Length: 323
Image (tube, rainbow, N blue to C red; front, side, top):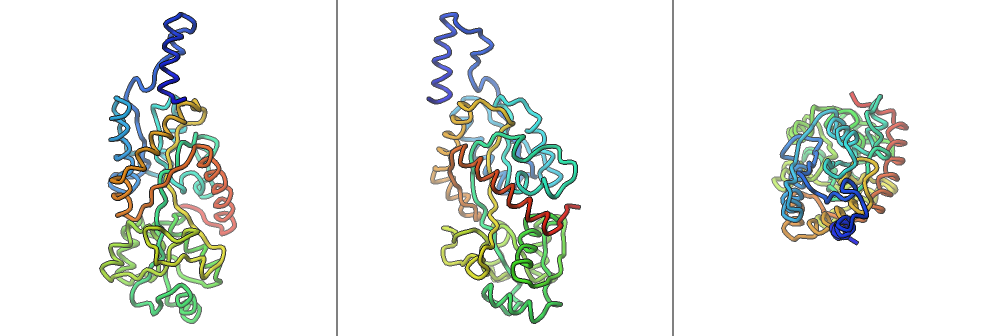
């Protein structure tokens, strides 16, 4: 039974005077806010705005995107964690906010698993391994051999300590036994630009940032970091084909505060999955290197919990802390 049908039946019960009016409020009766915990213009923001457009039409109430960036997504995420679990404040979160930040930051304002209600996984980001064309390697194995033979010549860029770029490279170092220099930047854009300029030689980063430079011949794409080849880049190998067991999957997801009504969660999941199946949504996100996905709330909850355990251990084992 959908949430809307359930409310309709409740309305009949209310009319009969069986339940008090306060228990029977329909949803949504007022605007809904989608919090994006990063700045406007990124792939999460674009996806959130497509969701808001279609949800507004479906629900008959404005669904408003609000960008609340800062502290690697913690500021906006904390707002949702503190909100009432009534469905009027939702979050477009990511793997980092819910599985990594707990280990990276001291005194976290929320628990990435316990403080939220998972609603739906939205997308997987194509996470790429790219090098500057000056590096004489065209495969992951060739890069490993070159890095071992030239340990002073490889520096890798990141968007800052504790970022997915940093963690991807640190995991790669540990898995292969090579050593490289970490050069952190204040954000992904300067990290990409300095890899293009050969100030750094290696970068693990979302395809949304790297693929235009690959297409222009300014970066070389060696692999992607997911557990299987991306349907968007079918001919590009995964790192695990050379380094068994290596993986870094970066996802986006929709969350609400902990304690939401399961019927409302199910209705939101159904609506979000409907939107994600639209060809125009799949094409627009695919053009940016983002593969939209679909899930049940239960499946997504299992993903969040298992990834939280996995990446918390990895971050702590590597001794990484955000700065």
